[in-house]
Length: 522
Image (cartoon, rainbow, N blue to C red):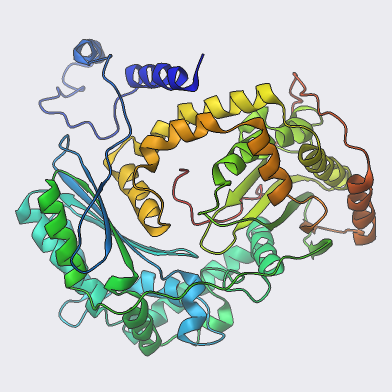
């Protein structure tokens, strides 16, 4: 069965078993009117009217001509009377030190405070406009990007005031000292929570160890010392330098014609200061050998993360690496890492691997939590599994099953207007082909064993790894010897186990996956 046929069958199954998250219904009876009757039965019978043979395709992405030269993408969706707008600025936390050397957390603080007041409106008035128009407005900073989102009804009486307020907030936020002081006060509680989360401490230390002096090294939220140095003037400087039209990508989804969307995009870009594009980020330096770091933490649970530099989002091997990652540790119980650590040995509740693809090279990592008495052997097993996966031939059957699973899950990336808009934001920001969503099944089908094998051996390095261990005690020399022995040993074929080992619940939090800028996987 071809991948295309698998996609068609999976889509029909999904379409027939769930209701679209954004389906707009009218005159639905109150289920509490007569609780003695099963009101769901007539509602389910209405599914007979669905066109099961409907060809469910990826959305058509249209490139809008923008007289201001701002990259603008649009997907028309007439099903709901809604418009989703995403403004993606090249202004993530990686730009913090471009505002002032040694200062971290600037982009994140700007995102937190941008709707706290402008020259004309206070925070209450801003919130009131969005509430009265039924709009959802949010701002978030990531490592690569600064994202502004607006979701509002397409009715001009709702769209226009919400859009005007969004533009005023971006251009004229005052970042008042009182709001800044409140944010700093709230940060004290957040820092206390951070100290009680070994997995979060581990991830922060991991990024610093892998990136060194690169802009990606510091946490998006900044540090205690740096955020205390942030002033309203610094936040305005960040806004004036980076929240400008020439540093922007626009994504629009919803009930608009192409001409209406184009006018909307030009109004947005035209009402911002034009400014300049952010410069390219520096390339991080790759580390050689093993860097083993121990973070003492008094708990019966230990947390571990392995990793090294990965590659950029525009790398031609990215899709092959996504396949490889799902095979190794990103594909649930069928992945090599989960089989070796949980299914066969019961060392962990969950073990996960991930690539983060970004402007500058991102990270490949895998992490898990385990009991202290199982720590050393789990390190041996996890690293050996990675070493063998890289050096052994890729299994054809496992690869095809992995690709089929990726294809079945892919429609989730455009299952609603909101998710479509997220994809447009990513496509525009990382300058991918506008028809990538449509081409994805064909691109995935073309991936061969040789493609995956080449990508694995080019970008996955068991001999060059940063290892962070959060535990009571650790003999770093012992761990070093284990890793060196694994690299020098002859790899052995990994045979999947079939019976899961029952596990006790972990006593502390399991490590989260390494943070990334990805909103959705495409």
